[in-house]
Image 1: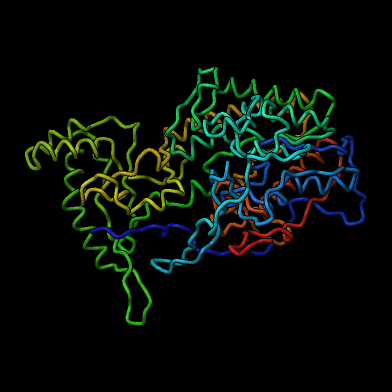
Image 2: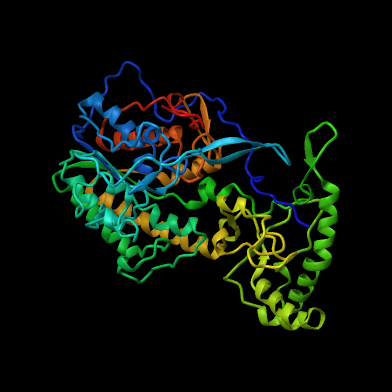
Length: 540
């Protein structure tokens, strides 16, 4: 009855951004570059995937070379900065990791082709092949870029976070295993052992992001002061966060080093949460695509209209009537043939009306079927997109491949995700979850700014930067960058991490913050020298 809608919700592809003549870092061609009051001779960067150069759902050599710390280091060489060593992955640029020959992290994403119906959209997925980066034989030496994908703030303090024996149990991080100085060391210990004169610290994103990208399936650990008991998708307690963050800053500044820190963006500013609309269901989409006489495909709107009529008669109408009787009629509206309709979702914050629906449907459907309807639709409603963050549902980018598919072990025709069967907790962020995330982000950012002020460090407002990218975009070096998926030019294909051009923009913003605090006059890099997307073909 319902067609498959996988991959049909992406924005139309426009790889290269439009032109403008504004720059984010002012350039005075003949002015000599000076360091100001900072010493950049030994620079060490500390952080997570954003520091490592993670992009397109993987860490790979080209991404590492285009990481914002490597870009910063290239500018620091102009004022006496020394070598900046990276824990580089293999030359094949595919990404992915293996442990004892078994793949544990997948290959990077690339654009594989295009859908043409109901609109032109890119097909995105992992490049073909298998990972070849083995973590069982660690690299040797010290590495200036101490960015560890997946790390939360308290992970950087944890001894043994680079012990291969703990990878499969979640006690260690495979990316740190590759370059930890010993199985018992911590990230921060290896960083301060290099005696940096200058550092960057951008950490804390994963303390809210893993909860967010899981659809809020984790726990809010407010009040739990023992991070060893946290699950991987839990929200960090703000006191735990602040304590761990202050320990990191204290360690990095103990020898008199200066540095720059950055705060955490709101998750609703990144494409992973803003690409798939809450209300994509139209007759054109529901009807699927059919082949035309000329061999092309086009939306089958008559089939979509007929399907909407059927859905309203058999499901949405009876649900609307029953819920209205219980004072919850606003949860469901009849599907429209002329406007976009919201996806059917489960909202665990709603009062559960399962028992009431079961009683209402028993006379017409029988006890067994009525009980099933009550269970499935007791907390169901249609997703909403409004002008307010507080009342908007955010459909995850990964959910686009779920919408229109059949839920396992659910009988037809009430098994179609987003249409007749509600999208579940892991598929969507509802307003109550967004509020938790925003509260945590605000508390973490207060701790970050307080630590920066207390130690006289430069501060880069990444939250403001991402909000600007999302709202108006940013003009730089004749380019217009925004936060739209694929076409915006700033984000990679995973919808979470920047692409090379986005990292270059971030590096320039770090330089602006450094200039403002330490009196240096770095000019920034030209964003045109960095690709907006990496190609599917080999990069080496």
